Image 1 (cartoon, one colour):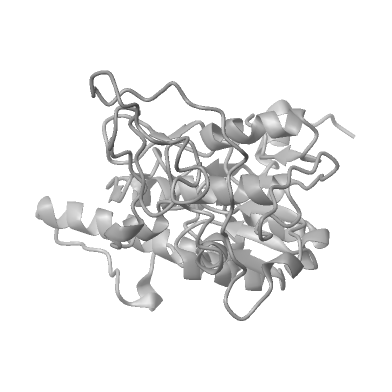
Image 2: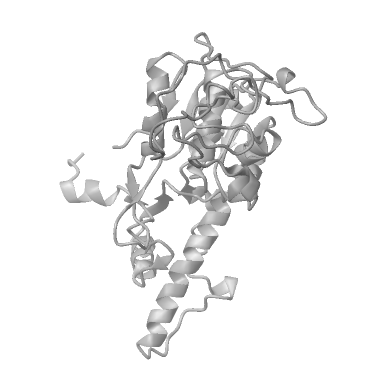
Length: 334
């Protein structure tokens, strides 16, 4: 039998193309007008096409594909209209959708691989990411029956985020430094810059000096007994009996990284961080935390790149080295 030529061998190999989305088909919410042409050429040439993205926005793979392809088509239509072309693409009629062949199984989102982890389906998960309802819906779709969204967790435990009430519009809950003496101790209620209860037994230690200029100088700090903690269990429940979390999952970027990181560190360091009058730092506690996105930066509409999840993961990394985490996982960059 005659040997197969190099050209014949190549012709039998079906090409495959994996497209990124951000920076390739769009920048932020702006879609480039030549995306439809590129996809049509690839499909007409017999290539197998799929998308992979470090985003997802809490959508399902099917929903994110439809959202992406519809905007690719819309950008091409608008460009055609601007050019005065008569042959326009039907973007509203599904029967004439030029990208109908791109189905949800051709979309790999940042959190898609997490669906394969069977152990997470029974674990109690602190779920981080926004939009909240979309992320919670994806957790249900993936079979995570015991996932708690970080905003729900912080609402049930309002002392987790000391600035949450202020951001919600309650000025009485602002934690600020208001110099009231030569020592500069500021307070709202019983809070001070040292954490000392200046309304109680430690008021004398916080009293200003009777001499010297008042320049708002903070110090010297007088040694005082350990602070009192007045945190109480949530209404209608006992916070000391709260079920510990087994893992933390950052599915998408949260709208509030401060709140999310604070809550994540709490549950990593303590099985029961909201116990009344207890400060716990359990050296024997080991739980994993999963970041879906390995990007340091990503391309949005702003001229400069925006931060991804790598920065926050690096803030938590020291806990890993202190053996509080069994792992900090994120997809590896090629």
